[in-house]
Each structure stands twice: as C-alpha cells, then as structure tokens.
Image 1 (spheres, rainbow, N blue to C red):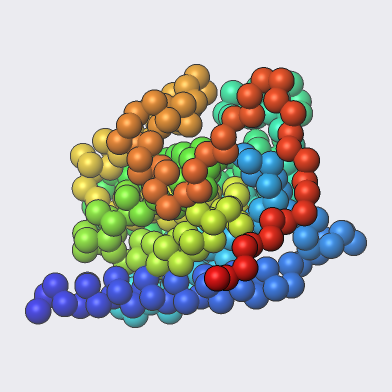
Image 2: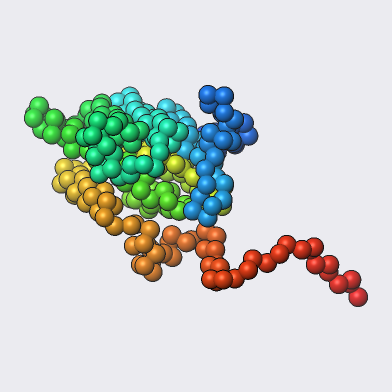
Length: 309
C-alpha cells in the first residue's frame, strides 16, 4: 500500500506535465509571441544542424508544463512546490534571455567568464551566475535534513551546485534532435522511482516526453530555455538523495561540464556505437554528403505514373 501513493503521484505529475506542455506548445506555435516589433516567427525561429528552420517555442512549452505539474501534482509539500517552481522557472527564464539576447561570440564557461574578466558582461555570464543563484535559493527552500547549521549550509551549497551544474550540462546536449530529452528521460526515470526524487521529477519527465515527437521531427528544439530548466529540475530531484550519492552526482556533473570545454560530446556519441544508436533512435537519417565536384540535379517536372492496365 505504501508504494501505491508514490506511484500514483508520479503518474499524476507526469500526466499533468504532458498535458500542460502539449497544450502550451500548440498555443505558442499557433500564434508565436513577437518581441520589440518583430514577428514571433522571427523571434523564435532558428536554423538547426541541417540548415533547416526550427522553433525555440518548445522550451517555453516545457517550462509551462513543468510549472503546471509543480503547482497541481497532488501530495507535494509547499517547500517542494516552491523549490521546483523557482529552479525550473528561474533556469527557464535565464535560458530564455540567453536564447533571445545571446550571441555566438563567447561559448562555454571559459568563454563567458573570460569575457566577464575583461569587463564584458555576456548573456551567457548572466545566465551562469543567475542559475547558480537560483539553484542555491531553491536548495535552501527545499531544505536539508541535517540538524546542524553548518551541515545545512554545506548541503545547501552542494545542492545548489548540483542544480546549476545539471542545468548547464543538459544545455550541452541540446545540439541534435531529441538528444537532450533522451538524456533527461534516461537519467530522470531512476530518480522517479525514489520516494523523494519522484515528487520533483514526474512533471518534467511528462512534459519532456510529450514534446519529444516534435523535437525528433526537427520542427522544434528545447533551446536554452527548455534544456536549462530540464537540467535544473533533474538536479533538484537528485538533491533529495543521501549525502554520499549527492557528492558523487556533483562530481560527475562537474567532470562532464569541465570535459565539455575540451571534448565534443557529439563526436564522442558518434564514435561510440551504443550511444550513437540511442542518439539516432527516432531521428531522420543523416543527410548524404554531396560528392566533391558534383553538380546538383536540376529540378524538373514530376514524373508521370504509367496508366493502370
């Protein structure tokens, strides 16, 4: 009987997140919101790795779905709801700022913090520092079971770092269709079966699963808005683990974030057969390379089918 309620809560949270994210995506893409006099299609439109148009509105739809789940999922404590709303919405808003105001001049921690050291405040630096701050506040709101003041302060700093590192790492996977959502589902499902983590992660997983078809079809992508929010919420769920597992999670997240400054995750995935199969699952096959010196075929009239006998 004790396992029924947590399972029901996970299913309810996932369903709420999926329904809300799907509804938000349909509404936003039907009438994309403009900004500063620019039409919504131009504000949210981007070009993907194939050079084809996609929309970033999947990200705001994910944040809406996760927020609705945090507000409406039954059985959550007030502190848990508040922490999930702050971690997800805070990371989403800061990611959205980088989506809309950022440039490709500075990349990664090294690029943004190097620019900051030169007195240049990039949108990426604002996002990094802002998500770090909201992660610590969300961790403080969620609380710590440690009775001592020093122990609670330590837990808050560790948990805030997990939220921030998770947000940044998930953004690094949003480079190919469906990749970030697959990573989120693979890492989030184990957290969903833990009594504490399930309260936080159910709605984000439902929202992500609902948006996966549009992502795989290369119509939309999470962008910084959605990937930062997804990573932050998974990080928040991981903060409900014991201290030893949390320190291991933080070490892993820190190591992967540091490695990304020197290693291309896309190349590693491509060169690892198991990872490549997972990465390509549900995706369109890669475009065939055009041979050097080949002349593109001229478009002509469509062939006419032979008449039926």
